[in-house]
Structures are given as C-alpha cells and as structure tokens.
Image (cartoon, rainbow, N blue to C red):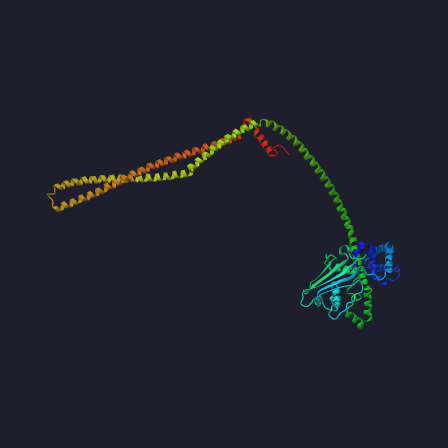
Length: 566
C-alpha cells in the first residue's frame, strides 16, 4: 500500500519522521540515537534482501541485466546513505524532543466528533470525544457498539469485522432507506495531511442505502468537498496510521471473546504481527518487490527499443532541421512578397497622383460639363414624359392584338353577311323569275278569262263557277308571291344597311390599328433617340470625358476609380 506520497513532496523532514512513527513511536523511552541506527540497519537489510532477490531474478534473465540491476541497487544504497547524512541529525533531534515531552495530546489522527443518522436502532445520535482516552458507558441499546461500528464503517472497514452485521444494509435503521455516518478527525501539527486543503479538521461522511449504493464525501473544516474517492480515504488512514481492521486499533466483543477462549499460538503470533504492523510492512515489501520486478522487465523492453528510438530521433531531428530551413526560406519569400507588394503600392501611388492631377484639371471643366449634363437630363426628362404620354395613349386605345381580333371578327361577319346577301339576291332573282312566270300565267289566265267570258253565255253555270274559283286561287297565289317579294326586298335593304355598317366599322378599325402602330413606332424612335442622346450627351467634350465623370463620382462616394489603388 503506498504511503504519504504528498508528504514527501511537501516536507522531507516530516516524511522521515512519519515513516519511523510506525515502529519508533511505541518505544519513545529508547535512546534517540538508537532509532536512526536501527532504521539504517533495517534499510541495509532490506537493500540486501532486495539485492538477493534481484540477483535471483537477474540469473534467470541473463548476466547483462544482473549487472544493471546491481548498479541500480548500489545507487539506491548510496541514495539511502545520502539521506541519512542529510536528515539523520534532524530526525534524532525530533525524537529527542518527543522524548522530553511526556503526556502531550496528539496533533493529528484523533476522532473529535461522530454523528450517526438512521444508523442501527438510532434515529440520530452524536458524540463529542475528548483529546485522549474516552469511556462510553450505558445500558444495552444506548449506542456503545453503534459508535464502534460507525467508526469502522465510516473509515472504510468491512461490515463483517464489526460483528454486528453481514453487510451495510444491516446497519440501516428499520423502515428507512438510507443511513449516514459523519466523523471529524483532528488534522494539526507538522504531520497534518494536506493542511492547505483540509485545514485543522477532516470531515468524512459515508452514506449508504438499501439499494446497495455507498458514497463518501471527504470535506474540509469549512464544509468544502475535497474528494469523493475511497483512495483519498485510504491515503488519510495510512498517513495517520489508522487501521480499522486491525484488532489492536478496533477490538470488538466477539473478537476479544474468541481471542481469549479459542486462540492458538499461531493466531496469537498473527495477532502480534498485525499489532506491530509487521504484516503490513511485509505486504508492502512484497508489493515493492513486485513493482521492482515489473519495472526491471519494462526497463529491459525499453532498452531493447532504445536503438530504434534513437534512430527515429535522428530521423525526426533531420526532418525538423529541414522543416526549420523550409520555414526560414518561406519567411524570406514572404518578406520578398511584402517588399514586392509595397513596390506595387508605390507605383500605384504615383499613378494615383497623376490621376489626381488629371482629375484636378478636369474639375475645372466640370461646371460646364455639369451644365450640359443638366440640359441633357432636362431633354431626357421631356422625352420620358412624352414616352409616358404615348404609353398612356396606347393604353387608352387598347391593345393592338384585341383590335386585330375585332377586325378579324368583323371581317368574318362581313363575309357571312355577303354570303347571306348573295343568297338573298339569288332568291330574289328566283322570285323575280317566278313572278314573271306568274304574271305571264296571269296574262294567260286573263286572256282565258276573257275568252271564257265570251263563252259564258255558251257554257253552263257550273263551268263558270269553276273558272271563277280558279281565278280566285290564282289571285290568292299572286298576293302571296307579292308579299314574299316585299319581304325579300325589305330584308335586302336591311342586309345592305348592315353591310354598309360593317364596312364602315372595318374601315374604322383599320384606321385605328394604323394610327396605333404609327404611334408605337414614333414612341420607339423617341425612346431610342433619348437613350442615344443620354449616351452621347458628353461626346462633344471629349471621348474620355464619360470615364472621367465616372471616376469623379466614385471619388465623391469614397471608392477608388479604375486605374487607382488604395
């Protein structure tokens, strides 16, 4: 288990004293010089053991690696001796100071306060502890065992080691869903754990529920949450030498009863090893040896890859130098481009000065040009008004296509009327022919009547009546033909009048179409003349005057004209 890495970074003196605290604090009555010497001997023995184990590993991996490991171990021994030379006197002085001070209160690692909420059979229970020994007495169920179990649970111990339950769920008060335990640990003195972050008190809160969820909140004295990880709690307990699973620190009733009644020498020896922290020290040595072996293997692999990495480094270095040269050349090219750009700027500035002088010369002619321009604009406005008038006239007259359509309709009607008139003339001719035939028949009948009249006396009355009847029939037929002829003549007159009206309408439509087309042609010519007049308004003043006017207008608006750069 790693111990107090942060203390090594902050203060080596306190680190050294805390390393010895596990073995030396229990023997404060020993001589001050004996502890450093013991520590030195222990280090040398560990180094020798490491050396022996390192040699065994080296024999299996080869002679080359064994020499490297011996060199590294020799370097480690030299570092340990250097550490003793630098800090030995200070460590002995600190131990001497501790020896002279008897019965003082510890500065860190003391539980000052505990609070339990919905824990075991207690809804809310809290205790404030004194700085040294505390006795908790009371009847059954008053909370004695609950305090010990809460300390074990809050500091990350196993629930089974308390002897009061098989899991965290068994510590939750009946009928509740979660329980919470809070512990305040003193954190003062030279060996305080991260005093800048936690301050003088470390507050540890553990909350666990029926659903199996469990969480820690490790806070400072001000209530600020510093961490929520169990690794931080383990580091705090390791730094303050708190071992909740060690029976020398937390001894439950069941563990004491079992130790007194059923313990064997082997169990007592194990108890002795745990109580003196030798078990933990052995585990840490094994862990260190494992890490050393893994590091040696990793170092061997890295050394094998080192030539390739060096070759790669040389290649990359060469490429980097080439890239640096390329960047330098690119920088020079950029500088030359900038100089070339500024040379263009100088040339354009000179050209702009020439253009400005030309503009100044033309500006003196500007009043006359503006006057001519106003006259041209006035003429253009007059032409525009005329165009609008013609357009309005065209709109009033209607669309030419509509007139053409009306013309075609009228011509179709005229053709239809002419056809009807021809048909009527043919009918009239037929009627006249029929009328002539009927008149001839009438004359013949009149002659026959005269003859019959002369024969009246000679013929019988019956024949006279028959003849008279035929005469009446002929007269009736003649009357009908006369009425029909009168109707045909009247209808012919009406058709003649309609034909004359249609001819007149067609003639008027043709005249209107011709007039509209003439107006359209005139409007087109006037528009073209107006456009040409607008284009050629400045021609009498020079061919380039229009471009000069455009440059002047652009300069008035703040934009450079053609041929000038900013």
